Length: 134
Image (cartoon, rainbow, N blue to C red; front, side, top):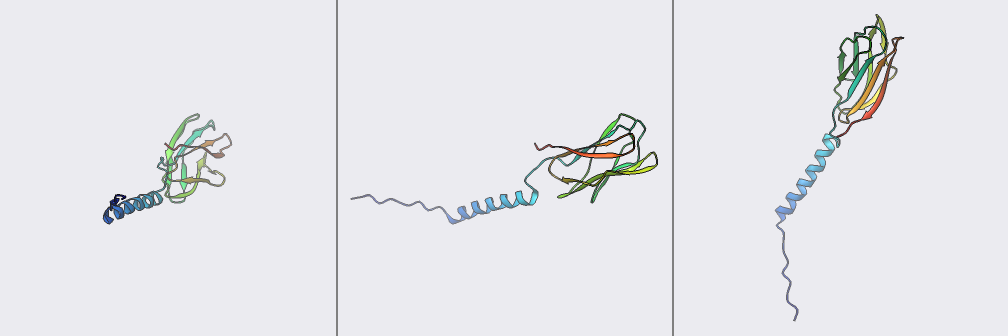
């Protein structure tokens, strides 16, 4: 005679709670973005040989003023980006309007790093440097 095997029944509430927890974790990750890096940082470098002021780092919904820079100085600024968007630099150098050509793609939570260089002609070159996710 084979002994009867007693089945263990897990309470339905426990199983349901587990499913709700897993679903909540997945939805939270999707809603908040999977990467939890820092916001974008832009290093602005004055390679023009002249004092530069009146520059702004801009996104589609935010603008951050760049402090005045003496020749050879640099400053790091942060912009706020919600979701994804474009990033560019604009302002005036020696009274002439300047703007980086086009916009660079950026995400708010991806830890993007950029370098904007103002050269001796007053042009602004904006380059993507790296993605710093930690």
